[in-house]
Image (tube, rainbow, N blue to C red; front, side):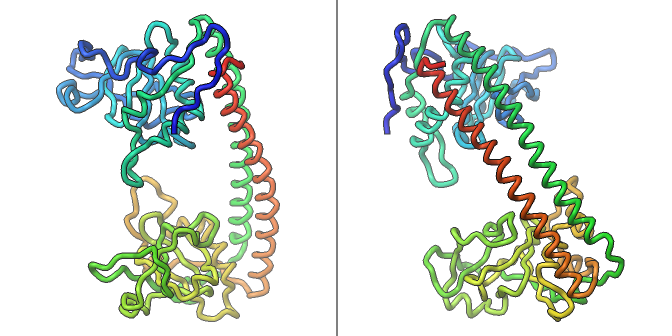
Length: 408
């Protein structure tokens, strides 16, 4: 797929990227170490995703980085080879240091005298350019990179410096207004999520009686595959549920389900989960809970998850148990509220000892009904807000692309 080159206004021209910028630093350039022998080092974290600004950096010893890393000079546009797309728009303008080193996972691109550095930044953040480079990524799935040959095949529409500066100023003003509006909408989404969490916590907090999970449900772990065996994409009668299949909406994503053979299933057939059980991840991403869809009734369950099997359905409602796992109380008892130290695994014994507020089955169903009604209203409101956010992001993309057609 070739880059789409369209007709430009009078006074504009198409230039190859190498006619408009230099990829990499001058061969004769070397960052100057400070009095302690350190130079700025730039990673691709902490980039402002909306503006492409990167003001933070660390200091590393010059001798440690001079051979293994990528040099850049002031006003370099660092374009990430691995995440040039979607929400991870890892492209940044480095304007606050004379030069330094950066991770090898970026291309440092330096505008020539006829091109404004920020004009170049906006160009590489425009959706059409990112789509073009995404289409040219190479390598195995999950490890794809934008190759240098693809970057060198990019052409950039160039106008006079005065016009470039005008475009940059107008883009900055328009995009800032859009970003501010998006930020306010996202704050509203967060407030609604907090409202739901507060209501959920409040409903359970007023229930005085408590019982341990193990007194109401059996807690059983899943099972890893026998040594040397692998999961398959080929559909069999025995699906195998992984933590990667758990969604944030309390169910299983069926699109990536893996399978095992009848022979493997026979070896681990005791470790299955039913549609009447609740799953919870206990390793990796800990604390994700949810229901098993009917299509996966009887599926094998990963060793990185456990199942909660209700002993008496007249004592405990499955949906009530699920909602409790979403509370701050449950997170605190499970040790999930502390983020300072990574918890390698949620022990089944700890999970069993967690205390759950206990009320009559009728009261449980009433609580579930109340929360589900509130969830529905809040989710509807969230959908409207998220729709507005997507509209603004589309507008932003349209403005960026229009700018390089001389339409701004």
